[in-house]
Image (cartoon, rainbow, N blue to C red; front, side, top):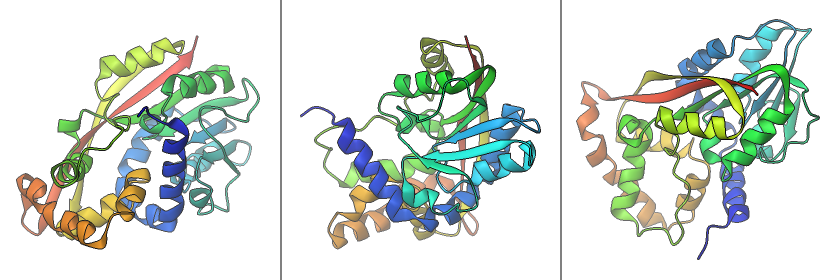
Amino acid sequence: MSFDTKQFKRLERAGYDRLGPRYLAAAGARSELAAALLAAARLEPGQRLLDLASGPGLLARDAGAVVGPNGLVIASDISEGQLACCPDLPRVAADGEALPFAATCFDRVLCGLGLMFFPDEQAALREIRRVLAPHGRLALSVWGAADDVPLVECALACMRRLLPPPRVARPSIFRFGEAGELNRRLAGADFCDIDIRPHRFTVGFADAAAYWQGFLDLAGGAAESLARLPAEKQQALAAAVAAELAPYAVSGGYRLTSTVLLATAGPV
């Protein structure tokens, strides 16, 4: 059985629609990442900005405060359920691989922890380059290598241990986790002046249950697949994840330090 990109996107959309405002609450724990990405983007008042894979618009809202009333920020996501969480923002539900915007209409495109979820990341990058003005910049973040992202990898390791392998593998969310590989993908879509830097951040959880719920509240398509499992299997996963979390135990819970790559680039 071959990988079905349309089914993958339907599952992602359904997962994030299901999460709704729960994603908004859970994403607050990663506010440090949003600040780092905005700093890398070097925003200025009056700029026109697209926040791609915006989710509930947290990054877009912070960017709007910088570009000000003379600027423009549009939040775009494949999930209408997520965009419904930011009714105060201009928003467009769209597939990032086929954007409904005119060429060269944005000064900045942001994509926070989103590129890994595009099955055809080259199509998405070409679309980003198309809508960027000649002087524009892309600023994005992606997860680092799996071993450097226990925040996600602990949950995935538990799933691999307890569940049978999927009939068709999903694109790995860590596939751009090496700077050289991310640079190659950006250059392959005709971006230049590429700058990639690691950024480490720490998130704490009171117990394994809080960690597991935090994962489910951010996991989109994976959470949608897990929600379709029998209740006893869901409960077994929630109980078993403590084994993966053991190396990160501290007094009062767990602390997990993970790495993202922050990249900026301009169109050729």
